Each structure stands twice: as C-alpha cells, then as structure tokens.
Length: 551
Ligand code: G6Q
Image (cartoon, rainbow, N blue to C red; front, side):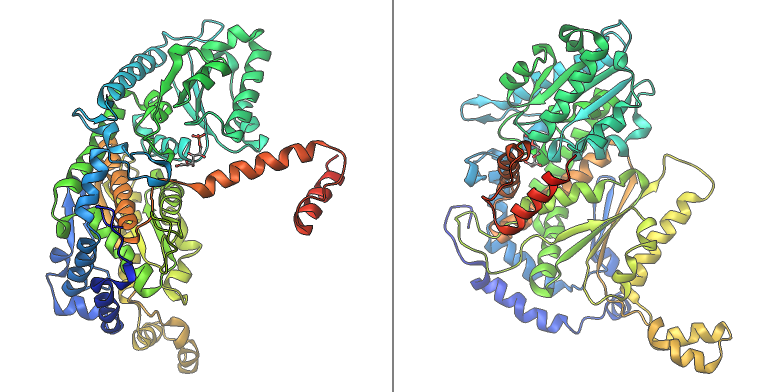
C-alpha cells in the first residue's frame, strides 16, 4: 500500500521486475572478484552515523543493485511513510493506532488526537527520575526500613526483552548497590529460582505489562506478592515493594500498586518498541536516569539520521533493502545476528522478537494475501560461542544465511588481549564467509602441513568453502548508553523499512494475541478431573495424558 492509501501489488511493480531480472546476473557475482576489481569498494559501500560504522561491502550487490533497490523503496513511497511514522499518523491500521516510539525520545512537542503527548512523556520521565533517585539513594525503603538492594522485573515479551538486553549490555553503568533480575516465564522455576536468592526486606518488584492482563505476568506478580506478604506479615507492608509500568493504570491500582509507583505507557507504544518508555524502569533504576536519557538520546540520533538522510546514505534504509534483496530474490529464509560482545548476548533474542513479531505477517495492511516472503527467521548467538556451534552451516551448509556481525572497538573490560582475540575472530569470520576457500587453496594448506598425497586428494572436497556468503559488519566505537540506543533504533527502523516494502503492518501482533486467548481456554480444563473431548484427537490425547500423570 502506498502512503496515500492506494495499493499497488508489490510483485507487479516495474522496480520489482527489474530486480528479478537483475538477480539473474547477480548469480554470477563473485565477492572476491568485486573486491579485486574495485579497491574503493569498502569506501563506497559503508556508512557512518555518529559512533557507528556500517560496512555492507561484503554483500552480493553492485551499484546497479542498490539503484534498483532504492527505486523499489521509492515506488513504495518510503519517504512519505517515514514522515507518517514520525508525525503520529495511525499507520497501525488493524489497531487504528499510531506507532510513536520515536516520540519517547524526541525533545519537541507532538500533538496526537488533540493531546500533546510530549508533555505526557516528560511527566512520566520526571516521575521515573524521582522514583529512581529515591530508590538508588536509599530513601525509598522496604517494609523493615532497609534500602532496596534488588529489583525484579516481572514482564514478558516486549515488557522483558528490551530492558533485559539493555540492563545486561550496560552493566558497567550499573549502580553497585542495586542488582537487577528479570522474570518472564510462567514456569515456576524462573520466579522460584530468582526469589531463592533474594531477601524480601530489600526486594523491589516492577510489574511491567502494557495491558496488565497477560496471564504469565499476572501469575508471577501474584506469586511474588504472596512471597512478600508471607515475609512482611501484611498486605499493606508489601505495598512499597511493588511498582508498575503499564497503560492499564486502573488494573495496576486494583492489583494493589500504590498510585505513586505506577508509571504510565500508552496505546501508541507497541510492546517491542517500549524500552524507551516506563517499561525501561528496571533499566533506569539500574543505570540511573542520566544514562537512561543518554540511551534515549542515542535512539533520537538515529531517528534524526533516518528521517533526514537521503535513502542512498541512510543506514536503516540500506539495511532494510539488503534484507529484501536476500529474502525476496535469493530466497534466504533466515538471518543470523552475531554480536561479538558478550554484553550483547541477548541481542539475537531481542531482534528475534522485533523482526519476527513485526514483519512475520502473511497479509498486507489492506488484508490481501502476500505472494512473496516476509520476515526471515532470526537466530544467532554471541561470538565466539556461535563459531563452536552453528557456524559450520554458515560456511559449508546448503542455505544462504545473511549475517550481521556486531562488534565494539573499545571494551569496558581490559583484560590482556581478550578484546583483540575477540575482534580478530569477527573480522576473520566475515572475511572467510566472503572469500571462502578454493580446492587449490585447501590443497596448498594440506601440502604445507606435509600431508600424504592420497590423504590430500581424499580430504580436498571437505576443505573447500564456497564463500560468496554475504554479511554486514556494524562496528561501534564503544558500547555506551548512547551508542546502544542508536543501535537498537537502527534495527527498529530497518524493520519499518521492510514493512513498507512488504506492505505489512509492523505494529500489530495478532499471533501473540491468539496465544493469549488459547491458553485461557485450556487452563480451566486442566483443573477438572474429567477427561476432555472438545479438541482434536491429538490435543485431547495430550491433555488427558497430562491429567492422568499430573500427580
Ligand atoms: C510486543 C508484543 C508482546 C507483549 C507481551 C507482553 O510487541 O505485544 O510481546 O509485549 O505479550 O504484553 P504486556 O506488556 O501487555 O503484558
């Protein structure tokens, strides 16, 4: 759908057809040769934004490919869509909502539906600041008069992944007196495992739930409250130990959370885009409001870049279009996220939700079925761990898996040559995926190891690496609140770019809602002693087996 509402089937656009045609010649692209032919390839195909460098020269693209991809973006009205995103148009059509996560980090006023949302945001931020300062400064205390030492975030999905990732990534900025913990799974093992290490007198819970109706979060919050009341002696004594981040203030109040400790989010912030709102409270408590604001400022830097930079030099636009090139023309069904930074260990999980929940859709905004691939499966792990696990398939498997390598020039942890070892692995992996190893190179290596001739002949096919496997490398000067904010906003906008090309709504999640409804239906059936018969034979069989073996 174009920004003005007129639909034009994607696969019938001249730009799409031109890319299909161009893809036929791309089958002959050899990255080794492209680098040999053009010593300036890195300079031509890399971008800088603040402290972030994006190298996309190791992609199966030429200047022509990029021109055609940019034409596709143009024919999907991308600049107009970017405008609509930032100005608060209701681009989340299926829920009739704006998607205004960018307003959570923008300094200026913005009126939506007659309300200046910037004022609401500023008020919540200043309440968060007072709360964080009081908790961190030991002024806000638990039932026995002791300062808080532990913060437990209870939330799931978008109310967990962003704060959990950022809290771990920014550990060097954490207040040493305050430990943070994240409980998301309704499996009692998660909450029980965390509570076993905590003292109720000094534990603060943040219940993060936009809707305040999510089964898992409410079950965990109730059990946490019971645990606290049991130790504190009364419901009233437990009150100072609970805060909430939610758009359902009434439900949080009904749960028993003091109005002063309820921090509002809004309908126009999607769960997976909500780190910058009150959902970031556990992070703000841990790293302090100053650092939290730097995180927001970094995201705003990327917002400004995305909004104001021409498409050909625009990082999220280029990343988004490269993803389209592989998903729709090479048939790549996956995308690897490979942070060479232990602090970004949770980035693959976070991006899995961001990308797959946003663009894992099979109908366009106007409800028509798509006849092309949308979001790839996102997976990954921190390097170098992944090298010893799944990289084998990246190097010699039969599927094309585009990869994002992410590393930092400076480390917070200066321990011997660890950082050089880490980064040398990053550079070596992206180089090896690109270059591969020919049969002759493999043989030469074995000869240099004095291998017997017959072994060399037998081993040669196994030592061949096809190469020509594309990757992006993102280098960050140092992992700081501001650069992390920019990195996460880069991916948010990349996802938006792809949603515009595919014509899907990046801001709804009916698949998640389905899960919420289904679990609610089966739960009462598990409580009775009688066998069930209302489902298909498999589901009946599984439920009845569970019931028979429950005790
Ligand atoms: C995110 C999704 C989803 C949501 C969780 C938790 O965009 O909507 O992951 O964040 O289902 O929902 P609540 O915050 O409402 O508990």
